[in-house]
Length: 467
Image (cartoon, rainbow, N blue to C red):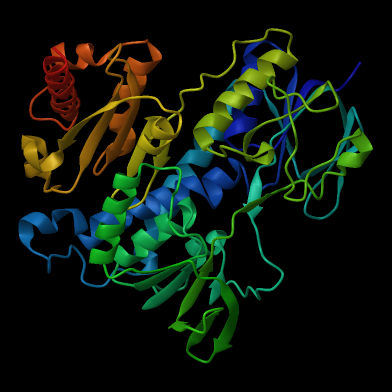
């Protein structure tokens, strides 16, 4: 008999939920994790620290109150790294305690150390001193996550040239920063430090940023960041980063040179699979360390599953959790239905962005007609109360059956507001529901009714013209 029925490698969102789900199904479960990484990258260096830091930045900088109290308003004149890390450490500590408690309550054995395959059913777990032992399992779930990709041409020193993990270890708030890569992580940090007064330059080799988002929303974010003195260099590639006494000089292939105290390289992420000895289990990873899976998150070896960032897109904590739960149920012979294709995307820039469904560009390309309904926060009483005059909510509505095709939100509370649209779309509702619904007043949620009425008025006008 095996030591465990289900063994999970990694305790991030995917691994943690997989272990808990298997334990709820009354299986003998173990989870392998390093001593200082309970909760995985998500809790310790990624999602939770960065979002907590964002909250601290918004509060201490007074940015969200300046519409009311003037552009010079600050809660604290000089925000230090200590101010930011104090809040971060508190939240991370609490979250780690919550996860440890959940694992303990559900009788999940925590094996401290790093795991690697000895064969398809055996894992060797070694702690930081190289000590440990071997355990066997009937089913194994790989949830080892990712780490920031580090191009070989760049000399990282974790002080002046850093990756996203290094952001939470900065010694002080830099006066200037170059962010290489305008993906989600790069733009989130760019907006945070710009809000603190850092002079930020974003370098991106593509012609636009966040190209999977609604163009109007991205333009709104760009305008807002430029207002915070962010400089964008699109269509540019970094040729070299030269260290100097006072920081770095980033040299672009076009010949431009950008001096800055700190350079953040946000060049995507790489699956943490190189230490797993996948070959011993009959598995392989691609050149970015990712593992291929089927619709049940099963790898090429039927009893081995993989979930979370290590399998690639969409690489979100929220989807990883659901993947872990689905994989665990399948591994325990109690399969669930597949995850809904309707998944919200949240980007924690300042201001934040969230959307679900299709963008205007996608619908136009697919030759699907749509009508647009827009609500602007400045037209809502709640928008005036909180001082958010730039936020907006956009509904994309089918003129044929009035179904919601997409919801796009930009501004305060976007990542919370999106779930109203998600619920309506997920239940097959139409824009009529939003038109007829009564929303609390004054709220930002009321923007759904305003946008729905806008869309319906346009659809009605078109119908009149067609008579």
